[in-house]
Length: 297
Picture 1 (tube, rainbow, N blue to C red):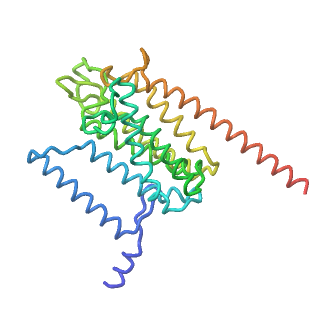
Picture 2: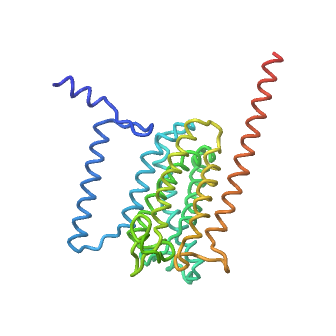
């Protein structure tokens, strides 16, 4: 019995290429499940729980846990995410808030930025703010920025998947009304504010999860620095560009008569395509030069 217990302690749980010590994994899962059950119980008892905030928190925690292993794929310290999070977390919230207020036309005083409890956060603003925090941290600690963005990109997509589940609870970021009764059921539609709307928040959550999986595989298989970063820009840009056609106008920020997120999505797609092409061309040129040098020798 003692021998089996020792073997159990040394064993690992492996999921999608990620590995954790069995004891720590089940302990963490047990605590997380206990907290979720407690929150559900409080909600049923009438306590107002911000499930949007809960999902955002879960997204950040999941990203932190997984990025430790992903950073190793770019020869970065597995401890660095713990330093990085102190810069990314606050600046991503500030960025998301400022972005929303600017394009919503409701930025009047500094206090408007602080009042996050009033609602109003935008993912693109959060990505920009988080990127600013990443750059600052990398410059301070002398860490390669491109390698770091490669390690962060997959878990960023995962965090966004959690965030969109939070949008379901927060009853935001939904689509246009669904008038066809045959389609008025989840996951096609959500009942929000007295009407059925396309569940664009749920669609994006699933697509972001698939993007996370794809970027993780790419990070492990392709060792070209920057390729995962540009793949994220391309992938997420495509997702948002398409889904914006189905978003309810009341849930969309505009620049003039154009949806801001759709315009930014186009820029992301273009940047992603150009970046990937340049990286592949440079890498092929290096490989060709290396092969020619080897033949000469």
